Image (cartoon, rainbow, N blue to C red):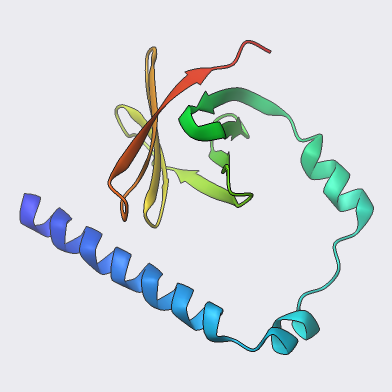
Length: 127
């Protein structure tokens, strides 16, 4: 089972790297032509979205739990925003997407990135 999970993690990492390379190699004009401009009202809706819980993580990263914990929005210190889906029935509670994982177990919370092997300590914000 451990070997399977290890192989799965490597496969997902390779897939993510391949996708990133394809996006990075796309001509800038193509991306600009196909990406619609965000509507100001839409941006405000996302900012005002109901947050179930907020966690501040080392390095200036933040995780917001949304939709009764069905998803997590990670605001990374480099400006990227990533949505993670909840893994149903996971113990401890886990949200994940390719290469990025957020785990909450009682008072313990951590954000980890598979390709760097880094795990960041997170604390629930009192808001």
